[in-house]
Image (cartoon, rainbow, N blue to C red; front, side, top):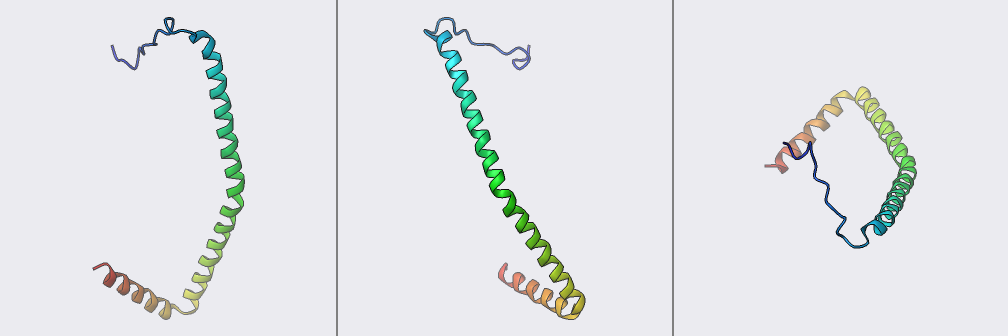
Length: 92
């Protein structure tokens, strides 16, 4: 039979104080999980405004680039060619 379908549960009856320690360990694990959850929530609350600001900045920069390309398509094409040639030369 597959070991994952019928997992073996260790026999802790021979371990001294296992029945007394189990609730304490469970309580400690619960507190650790709650603390980790609170830390993740604080991090998310702190990072959310920064992420929104970066998204808005990226959108504004993209709109500015699009406007520049529409106003000066030949200059944009030459700049793209120059950047491509520079990257190609560096990566050789």
